[in-house]
Length: 162
Image (cartoon, rainbow, N blue to C red; front, side, top):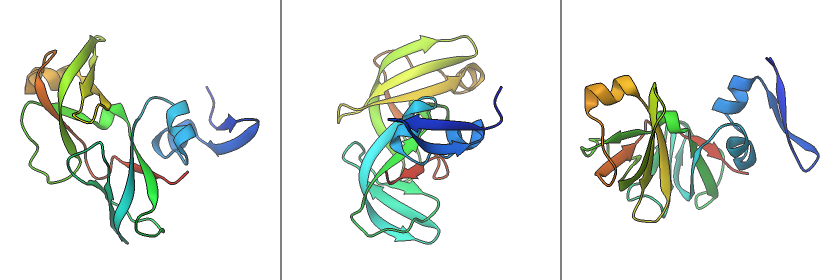
């Protein structure tokens, strides 16, 4: 078990930190995809305030709302990394105006304590969600080919500029 790790790409160190820091706060698209799995939404910054940003992505019907600002110009291309365990799947439309999309369950893998859902969006992108079995028992489990909504909190997205 390592207390500190380094992520390397093409012989160069691209990020150093504790396993938790690198997983929760990747500094690049490469680190986000290398350490664990992620849902990566590409888009452009349409609003940047000190306490939040909005990103427009062709993959979603709504803007992505991230609960912290960045330093960058409007129109700047960014990636938003959202880990599968932070994405919820529901048969009901979320009440929030941001961070959701409708889709169809294209695959479900039962893993015991959790199920891995693959939801295909109208854009063709697949969003992966890791839902605990206890959550599925209390909320009702969507099935293969069900029309569903995927959504996540504003604190769940990590903004990636490289």
